[in-house]
Length: 114
Length: 112
Image: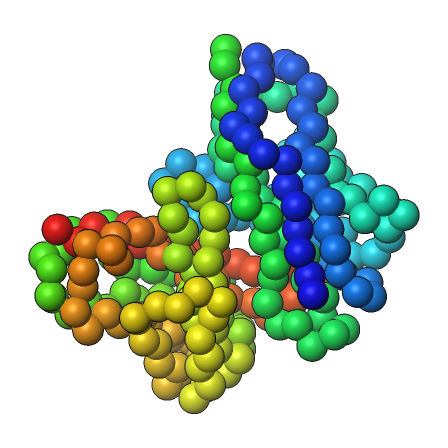
């Protein structure tokens, strides 16, 4: 079956630090991969996605590259801000195998201190 | 603007009351989902629907029920609320999984 393993949190960084949140997956075939962000008191928002191997998704200074050889989709940002404090979820979908649901990781709480 | 709406945002209710959490989307999506999110952040799928008159139970057993009479509307009902139902409930829809989900803002339910 499908599964997503996400870096355990919480993660605390100083403003302007470099961020990496690790995500690895298990799936048959060619899944699409996503990062979602959840700000306090809100629902999840799509941050970025990649639909095939070697694709790079990017948005708001965040990037993630779909690495099929390592089954990974790590989230990175070069210089984090206090406003990036949120919970981040990695997810996959595997449309070609009839799975009509996203599989989510357990979430990583990120706190940025000034 | 196409979006997905959940009401109420916050609800405090007494044990034994019947409640309905509303979820509506204006994007014409066939697929809709309900998640329960515990304080540890993890998301648990409790119900989903692939279209009108189609509903299925999710991965986490729930005492709630859902209906899908119209494409845009996917309400969740608890016949008799209990403190163990206290949680955040998130509704989502999808126009195709290559695009992912669009989530509502959630309903935070507290049963006292």
